[in-house]
Length: 313
Ligand code: GLU
Image (cartoon, rainbow, N blue to C red; front, side):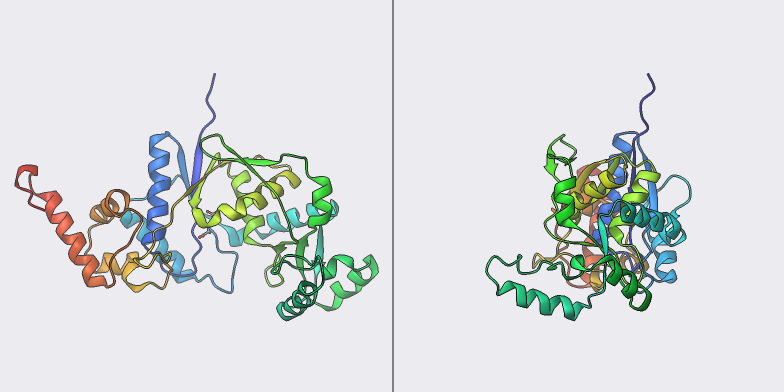
């Protein structure tokens, strides 16, 4: 019997230069693919034209190659696939599980303050469903004159979703997929959202295992719900820990000492960075300056190039 080809992907967003946290994620994906004889694909998640920049894409590809990441075929670019995401929005509209929301951020905040003070109000940060109650006529009219986002109708979904809808992790454990407020799945400015695009692409690229940071665990229930509504298969999910600085903060693209490109240009060897991230770091990037990182990584690489019995470090 032919085995199903296992396939995972690395899916960075080009909103800045890659940092060691992204490198760790890419290395974990590659390691998993090698261990399981799986394919690794690269997807550039660049739908957000307000934050993604072409020069970050070029730098990203260069940095990943330098790090030794190899992917199957050509990278997939989300900005070229807007029709696909739009058709998914249309399916959800036909199923009547989303509604247009015309609220500005300020409207939402004001309404949250008002309903939070009411007895049995919604949870403090939840969208109170203002636009859920508009009539079809009001919606039609407003859609002609105002920009709108698309929100999932959590009230309707609670009645519609099968009991016990779950996503699976790598240990075969089941995690409940619930929705407790009306999340945005189509943004005002770019029509669809990361959530919708990622779910469509994982399915269309035949991804069997999604490997990504722990920060996205909270979104996985929503992804499972979208897969159910759009009749898509659900991959297995592995969420790896994030690399943090010594204060326990997750690394951001602007953490100067941690950009791959700076480390590369400063002469750091990709192998020693890889070794540090996968074997030594314990999930912490302990360096406050580029100098410090270079010194440590250079001495580690000098150590690994001397015969074992001569190593003193
Ligand atoms: N593009 C997302 C990011 O850079 C990752 C999405 C995913 O792996 O599902 O954080």
